[in-house]
Length: 330
Image 1 (cartoon, rainbow, N blue to C red):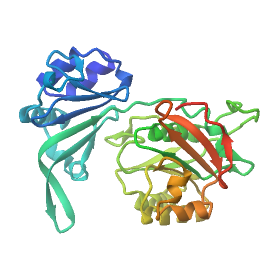
Image 2 (image 1 turned 180 degrees about the vertical axis):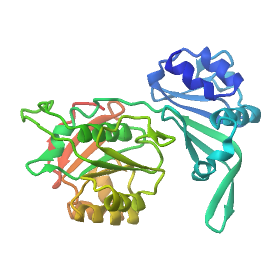
Image 3 (image 1 turned 90 degrees about the horizontal axis):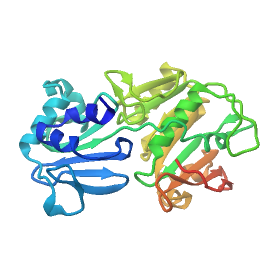
Image 4 (image 1 turned 180 degrees about the horizontal axis):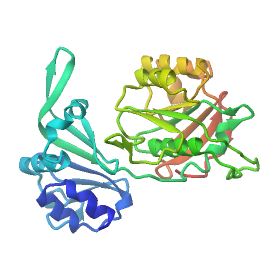
C-alpha cells in the first residue's frame, strides 16, 4: 500500500472512492479542502483544481463533486478514530495533526467560555494539508548561515506558500545533526558540529508530532515543544532544555520579539521565519522594523515565487549586503 492509499483512509467513503481514482503524484499534492455544500478542491502543484465524482481534475466548477455535511462528519470520525472528544484541546486550537504529520484545519461554530474558545461544534470546513519533507533542500543555503563565530541568528523571509517551513525544517535537521562536508556552492570548507536545537512548534507544522513523536526528521539533537505559543515556548526551552539554537515559525507579535531578544541575550542562536516579500517589506512593518534597524539577525534568507515556488531570491548579511545571488531553489 503506497503513501496515497494510506493517506486517503482518513476521508469518508464517497470522497475516498473519488481520491482512489485520482491520478496524481502524491508528493505534489498540497491541500484537500472540504466545505459543506461546496465543491471538493485539491491544491496540486500550486494550482487549484475541482475534483469530479470520477476522480478527474478539472477547472470547471459545474463538474465538481459537492461535499455534503455527512461526508464531513464521517471524515471527522475517521480522523478522530471515532473518539473526536479525545482531541478537545486540539479542536480548541483549530487544527489536528494526524499520523504522517498531516494537519487538518477546522472551522465551524466556536463555543466560548471565560478563557476564550472552549471548543468547536458544527464543524463544516476542513483544510487537509499534506506534510512533505524535502530532505536536503537547505544544502545550498546552510553554508552562508555561518561566520567565524559560528551559526548566525537567521531570519527566513517568505510570502505564503513559498516553502519557508520546509526550508526551516531541513535547516533544523542539518544544524542538529551537524556535517563534515564541504559547503555546496562555495569554496569554503564547512565543518559543522551538531548543535542542540529547541523547536517551538506552535501549529505542529515543523516536527508534525503525533502522540508526542515527531513525524518529520528534525535531527538527533532536537527537542520539540508541540502546540505551544511561541513567546512562552522560547522561554520554557531556555529554562528547561538549554538549547544552543531556538527555532520558531512565523514570528510577528511584540511578544514574539521580546522572547527572541531574551533568547539572544541568553547566548542561544535564533532561527525564525516571517511572512514578507523582501527586507524592505519587513522594514515597513511597525513591530518588525526595530530588529532590522538594530541588526538582530546576522543573516536574512529571502524566498520568492516569481520564477518558481520556493526560489531563494537572495541571502543577506546583517547590513543588507547580498551574499548569495539566488540561483538555487528550495
